Length: 222
Image 1: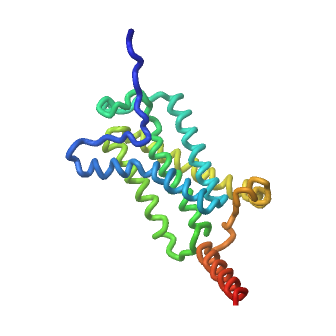
Image 2 (image 1 turned 90 degrees about the horizontal axis):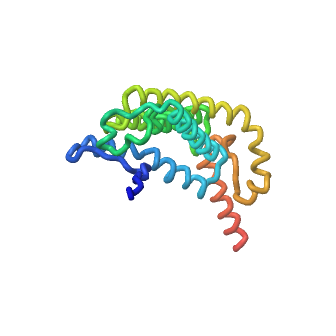
Image 3 (image 1 turned 30 degrees about the vertical axis):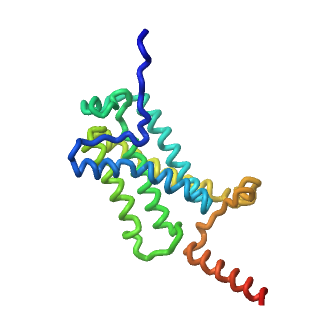
């Protein structure tokens, strides 16, 4: 009796040519979406629980579902190098990595220019440089490592920018008016969900309030 075929979990299944230092670097770059999801948004929910960050993460999740729907509908094959990468059983158009990173970059950029974030900065270009640099490197890595064609990563990046901008508009033009309702709901109160997007410098605000609370406690003990 023939044994059933096996398929690898592709979350961190990134291959590069042995001895290729650039390939090794780009393989790690290709994992940036995983680091953002697990290290960034999961940590954000545990320690901060900001509505803007939560809807940012929700948009990325929806974007990936859209990507999978398009991939299964179009069913465009990956480049011939997929055989070496053991990825020929999945589709390539559009690139989910490129879509993820360009969604992240455009959404982060729009948040920065709207003044939403942990700190206030006058030099916004410096803040938004890193996500766009990572997005471009991720897009390049997917072609260099043989996972996608140029057309597939360009399609993913374009879709990511479109969905990211659309979701930002939806969150801040439609859903934003419901933020106070969410904060005052049972869920919001139970999990300390909050919105601080109206505060220009959240870190300074929290720092000043923490110092004020400590000083009041010290005054009472005296």
